Each structure stands twice: as structure tokens, then as C-alpha cells.
View 1: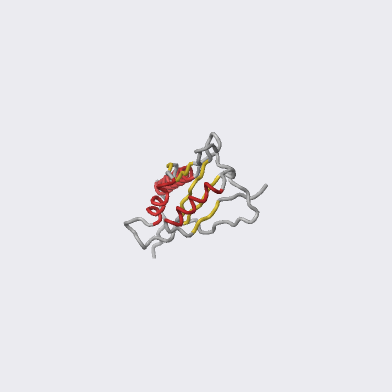
View 2 (view 1 turned 90 degrees about the vertical axis):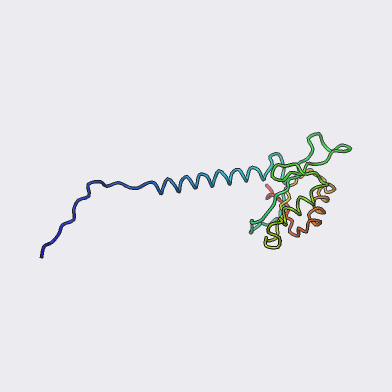
Amino acid sequence: MKVRGIKPMQDVHVNVTPLIDIIMCLIIFFLLVGHIAKAASVKGIKIPAAKNGKDLRNKSNQLIINLVPPSGGYGDHAMPSILIWNNRIPESQLAAYLRKEAYPSKHKGSNPPIKVILRADRSIPYRFIAPVLISCAQAGIASIHFMTRRPG
């Protein structure tokens, strides 16, 4: 019986094409997530502290509403700005906007309920927060969470 030997491999190299594909997909993913996170939050909002706040476990299907105080202070007609995805939404149109976000016409009934995260500056009086809560109720949104930070 003839024993065959293993031929030595002359051209040994590692195929890095799949590795490059995966790295490119990761880079694109992190760029998109960073862009979405930047668009959802607004700089300059001083989040209030709360001792009894709870972490939001399920972060899917949420909408962040930012209430930014007026730059000149609260005068006769000064109101905080309502920003969603860096778009200024007038208070009179907020309920309709939230209704459209919560119940898109294409997928009516198939979407899980939306959660609203309210990021309001700690200097904003409640009289300006109440209309946002009323608009959420008019849009049929039952899950509203206030963003807070831990004291200290």
C-alpha cells in the first residue's frame, strides 16, 4: 500500500474580504445610531434630579419630546419650544402630530403602543408641561415617562 504524503501548500493567505464587509457594516450601523441619538436629544436642557426614578427597561417604540425654555426668560408671551427630532412643533399641532406618530395609516392596529419620553428643562413651570400631557392624552398615548437624572 502506497502512503501518500501531504503536499505542502505554496500559496497560503487569509481571505479578509468577509472581515472587511463586517467592519463596514458595523461602521455604518454606529454612524446611523449616533445620528439618530443626536437628532433625538437637544443640548442645553437641564434635566431635573429625582431620587425615586426608575430605569426604562423596554426602550422600543419610543418618541422623545424635548421642552426647551425660551432664551429670554418667561415674559408675557414667551413659551418653551416643543422639539421632536429637532423639528419645532407648535402646541396647536402637537396632538395631531402625536396621533400620526402613534398610529401610522399604513400599519394601523399592528404597531405596539408608543411610549413618550418627556425631556423638560427643570426651570419650566408645570403650566407649560400640562398642554403636552393633554396632547398626548388626545392622541391616545397612555405611556408617558419623564426623563430625570440621579441626584449628585
